Image (cartoon, rainbow, N blue to C red; front, top):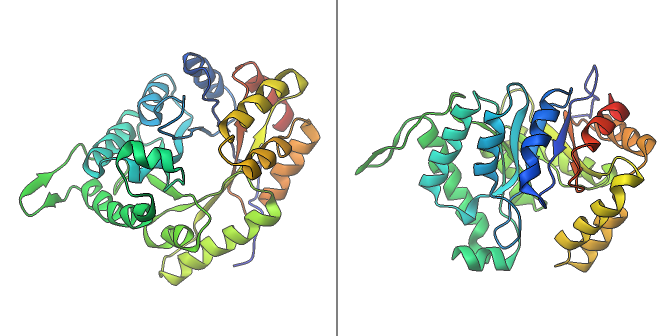
Length: 292
């Protein structure tokens, strides 16, 4: 497939900061009154972040229009049956406004705390997806165990976007997903991952096209940049290369942010998530004024 920039105004979402959960209700209510399409929340276990499914359920109840999304939920750390119930419940509470961004993660400490073998997390996710799809369709858990309700509001389960970098991760898009959720990589790198997701889609005989979502780290000007950079550095402190890239890749100039959105759309992104690392919800209105 050749990349085609979607027509019309951009679909933009907000990646929520995780350093002060008490502010997230304010973020959600403000975002619901803007043109932003989606609110997203990351998942970690051994980190000082709010649990995403619990938090997004609260935010879904405080909003009426905007979608809520995990970005990405580390499914191998979770009980599969419980995850099916939690995600279906959230989709019901949100009236079908929930997107399950899903991946395997890569932190050894998260896997140790969850009692999961780091080396088998990809195979575990493969097995989980088969079970999740069956349970979301209302089928029994197994021959001796009945269905696990409730059924999601979205027939067959919430929208599923896979994140990751490895070929096996991207191939899950065609096998089980509705699209691909990219990390905060420059467009020149994301282009290859988008094309790989489209190839997976074709290889598995899917009709239509996968939804492609990009992500960029932003701060709406100097007022928010210092805190955002500190929080980014703290989050990525486990990996010197990722830490350096994250800090260098933080966009703070309105023209740079708009140019990044245009560049992602040019390679076929259906939505671009603007990930905010400063906790101040005032930047929502500033960002909206810069990009819409």
